[in-house]
Length: 399
Image (cartoon, rainbow, N blue to C red; front, top):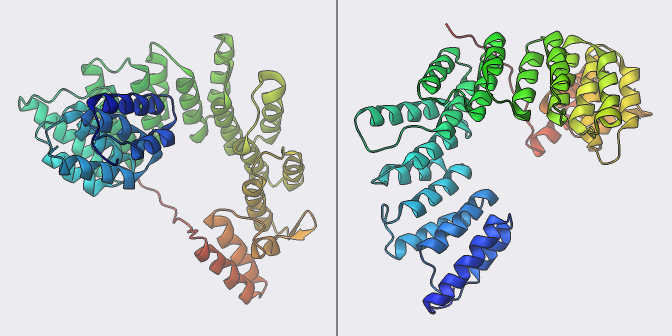
């Protein structure tokens, strides 16, 4: 931006930036903004800021915000620009900056409230997200001009509730959505299914699915996974059969949910059957996640020979390193020291295999049990160097 040109130049640049951003070419939109030789107006900034948000480009977002403030665009001067900046901060996880801007906005519409609830829910602050949603309700009840929460606001709050595992809060949000006429919205129904499942109420998740007027592929995948994670393998299979009878073609997410159900139930044969049928019958190419899930099923059942066969059959485009990490974890726990002619601990020491913190900890323990203390420490050092941490398991109930 080297100088001020005519308003026609600004309009031309703005149209170009807006077209690039809308067509999914966000990086080009930001690059075009940086090359502008005309002073951008509010519409220009409102066009480039969504591109920054999708790119998670916090530095550019801050720079544009600073430019807007220096040119006299204080908070409240243009709600569209304020909301666009707020969206950048929320999606980039800069919650302190987002909250500061939110508090300074003289007028907060439903987009601003939803952005804050969404940002807090997805940035590891679910309690704050629920508190923000309650604040919005209190402001609305006090007669403020703020519009009522819409489906996006409720979905964002449900994501926070699902993270908390609070069945009470989930039921309250369900009741609110129903009273506001949002309960029949497919996107809200899908979020309710997911929230009830994560709060441990599989029957209620299934009931929401049954009552949903219109079901999309996300609905089928979410309810199937809800049944899977709660050990309801039979119900997951029945849902799959119902899908086929209603002419709904399953996608990769549905198959992943089914394979998860088989893994939890120890049904290795069915897992292998459906893995083979994915591409052959339904035209869905298995991804790394599908192979990893079947490897997990074999590992849980102690059938490491079959797991090894699956690993060798994986397509080259799949992330073999991730799958090998899953296989190694079960191999070590079952006392198997070799895979493909290689010592499992040595694969980790040489950096040929990468995996999660649990697998690293298991390998380190196996080395320590064998008296290879230096190698055990080396595995731990590799974990630290790669900033891999083993998350502590936790269980909680609501009373």
